Amino acid sequence: MTLWIFCLVLTAYVVVAASLARFIKNKDDFYVMGQQGSTLLIVGTLAATFLSAVTLMGIAGISYSEGPLVIGALGSFGAWVGTLIAVVFIGRKLKAMGCRTMMDFFDNRFDNKWVSVVALVLMVIGLLGYGIIQLIGAGLVLAEIIDIPFPVIIVAFTLALLVFCSLSGMYGVVYTDTMMFFTMLAIAFLIAPMLIDDAGFEAMRGLSEKLPGFWTLGGANDRPLGWSISQFLVWILFFACTPALVSRVFPAKNDFVILKVAVIGVFFAPAMQLLVFLAAGAMQVLDPGIEPADRAMVVGFMEHTNPALAGVGLAGLMASIMSTASTLFVLTGFALARDLYEKLFDRQVSERRGVMLGRISQALVAIVVCVVAISRPAGIYWISIYAGAIFAVAWLPTIVAALKWRRMSAQAALACMLVGSISFIVVGELQRHGWISLPAHIDNLMIAIVLGTLALIVVGLWCRPSEHEVASFDALCAQRLSDSTMRDFLAREGGARQLVREYRRVWGIMLLFVLIALSLWGYLFVKLGL
Amino acid sequence: MNFNPHLLLLFGNAFLTTALSVAIVAWILIREYRPTIKRLTRENEVPREPLQHDRGADPVPHRE
Image (tube, rainbow over all chains, first blue to last red; front, side, top):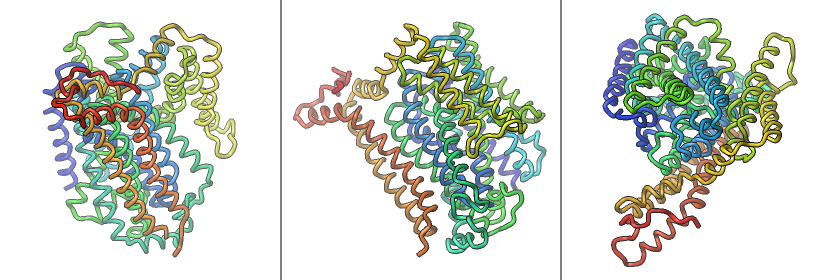
């Protein structure tokens, strides 16, 4: 049955993505779906990209064996706040500047080829490294569950990703992400509560007697508080500027969509994660001794629900892998076609040729991903250690300074990105080989971000920004997404009334979600914490 | 009753995430949208059909 579900789900995604290819008329459609993204679609793609296999397997495994608070209380909180920053501060500002990709920001702000090249190389390494390693890890588990060879799983995923990304560009990614979001919702709001109900709140509370510390921050393994704080910092810094999340708002129709996504999408981040973590805790009551622990939720789907829900759970697991992978790979393809070929090599291409170029680069990325994932070279594991966090150490200080500091220059950006990324890897390697030991609760990410920021400040004070950099800073300060949104509304027939209605609707949504959040988290606290 | 402060932190942080997002969005709405919305609402209250902005005569919003 699992094989049928695998084939059926994959076919459904591919059919939907392929049918969207007819909407691709120009480059704008391919890269940002013509900026027609509704609230549902942008919430769907943001939440689906946020929830990766790491939540359903890695962190769920830790929640099962050590307790749901170990990562959930502070590490995940960093990810939720980071997502909020990515949407409302960075993504919204970049969209106001007219960026279609993250690289547009570096090009517009600095107009310096070296900055663009370094930012592009870091982005491609970061996205591919993080994406491929997730695909390998989750693919191996899935191959075991479905009982088909790992290379077949990877080829099937690659073909599906090829259709999402190459045929229908951002349309394919956003629509399939939204479909996947609903399967993830089913896991969080249907399967997870069922598992919790089966275990019972009383029995779950009683776990702290069997596993002392299970309901504490340190967990059953009594991890130090410094470790939890370091997790918070890692996740908030990574999520705040990762292109996978920031770029989710670029296809949004207008500013109201982004504001609604900031409330609804950011609510679903903890809602989906915490319910899964609590369900993983419930699995400790229902089925103690699952080995390895990261299979806890899979065992929950397959052995503690009915076959239909097991199918939904499996589809959700596939969705968590594919939604994150499709976003990471589509952005890599965009970077190669639009940012490397069109802009860095200064090629003028027509709309039609631009779309074709985008499709070819997506196909190239898919082939590389497939070959690397199947061959699993040792180097990919090394890259994966550093891939995800590279955005935190190299990009975050650069982007924040570029948005807020008038003296920010290309030289300062280069210094920050190079010092941040190189010191991150060098300190990490020295520590990994035992040649240095860092003080307790200090890791290479913290050192790299401090060094990168110091380099940025010193070089920024030393070098005078160019005329272009000063002009681009003044322009970005003057650009507000709210202005263009209001202008668009008021230019329409009956636009004033629509504008007032949208404004009130956002307030209504805010009130509604505060009430929902208060009820949900309040209920769970009363049941487990009092 | 067995109060667990760690769980209060867990669910408190989950609620705080929504509270933070709501506070930030409210701040944006008040700072960037409210002046124009108030002006449009005032104009709407004046019995004048159709609204000046509904005809698209002055699409540029005023910053106050």
